[in-house]
Image (cartoon, rainbow, N blue to C red; front, side, top):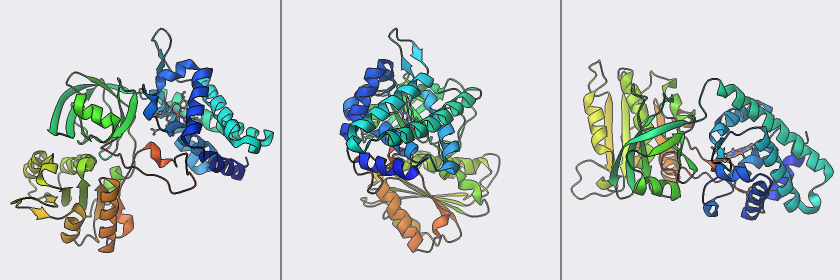
Length: 407
Ligand code: HEM
């Protein structure tokens, strides 16, 4: 496998940007019209996600250590992308789909690489795609024995906490297991868009899951404005290994720093600490611009006051809401980062940070400058944009954080 040729041609190709993505989809939908129903209804807003991810993964096929586990998991996860045939019956993603996507990929590369597209390079791409596709198919076949492709979940309650923030609770049709701090791909069937959201609760005996969403894009605005009790959403398999490893050094205090709906996975972690008997001193700093931005204040005060079930451990959770400005606000003033640093030192603590990209960056910079070893800080982002976007793939990777407030 000539990895250098794959990567070099991919970098060259990526400059074509959205035009290449349009060509890819047009080719795919012409070769295989049934794949159209797997993608969002309105492709006008569709970014280059699949193509950017696909090319990136295939052009890194030599990265064997990473590849096998990653591609098998990706294949298992791809089971949630289901289409419908002309009669409206569900179509499972199978070998044919991989073949069609492979054909569309090669045709698009050929179209945009021009004279650089030689028979030798074609053979490299076809071979690399085949390796990845086979791993994905075998990952899907294996997962089929133990987990469903997705869960159907009924919306039990929707609370609009602010004009742009809603909290909703769902009950999956059967138990959907996840770790506190992880995220799940969520789809609103009308839009056929999948976005990652983090459960805001530790797994509950009744299986219900609470999500927090701030309106920032098409998916999240739809959820905030239109989602109603009784609606159905789909949930994919949980992802994420960073925040969910909060328990790696249980003897250390835990500092959780949240901004906006980045609170959700950290509240799930706080609940998990409570379930373990609250033996771990935990500080939860939640930042908002004004007191009105602290949309989950009541639930957090209740969590801190209740104490862990089955034991008496007063003060296990120090909840510190902090605002940048608030008339007659009696609590902490400053950004989440400033307040967290003031409450320190945190040299001997595990630190979890979750919020917008700016908030996350600012907080990590401030905490490490105050002496927190960088390896003690955990944060996470789940997004298609982990893969470099097509236009300017050679430049810095875009990392739009959508961990909980998905766009
Ligand atoms: C080697 C083969 C493939 C690779 C490496 C690949 C990779 C990816 C990746 C990394 C994502 C983003 C996933 C996420 O963020 O959760 C994605 C999304 C997607 N993939 Fe694939 N994929 C492959 C084949 C296919 C095939 C055969 C189909 C079906 C026709 C397909 C349909 C989709 C769809 C519908 C999405 C979601 C796109 C969106 O919402 O914008 N993929 N793919």
